[in-house]
Picture 1: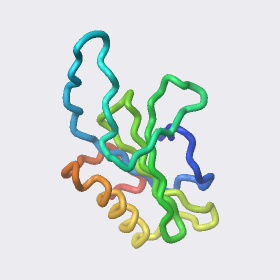
Picture 2 (picture 1 turned 135 degrees about the horizontal axis):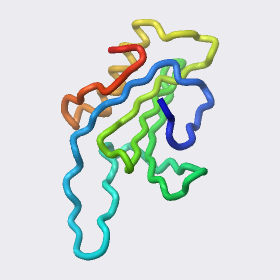
Picture 3 (picture 1 turned 45 degrees about the vertical axis):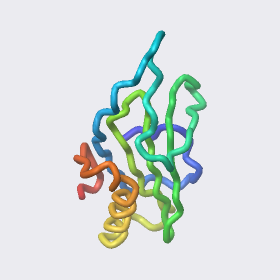
Amino acid sequence: MPSFGAAETRWPVAAWIRLKLPPPPPPLVLSGISPPPDPPIEALRPNPVSTDPRRRVWALEEERDGWVLRLVWDADDPTVLEAEYRAPRTTGRPSGERLRGFWEAVRSHTRPLGPLPVLGADPIP
C-alpha cells in the first residue's frame, strides 16, 4: 500500500486499512475547470508530496499509547481514505487489543461519514 505525503513519524506501518468514502458532491462551477474536492474530515491538514507539488494530499497524525494513527486522503482519489497504525519496529505485529484500539480510533474520525466499506486491510478487521 503506497503511503502518500510525508509522515511526521518515521515509525513503520504495522497495520493499515483502506476505506471507501461516499463520492463527493459535484462542485459548483461558474466558469473554467472545477476545483478539487474538499477533504472528507475537517481534522485533515495539507501534507505536500515533495516529488509532485501538483498532488493535493491531506493527512492527520495522532500519537496514541505507544503508536501513531495516520489518516491520509488524496484529492486525486477522493473515494479512498487510508489509515495507518505506525509503531516502533521493536514492537512487532500489533496485538488484538491494539488493533481493536486502532480500528476504534479510525471509526472515531469516520463516524460522521456513516458506515464505510473496507477496500483492503492488513490484518483484516
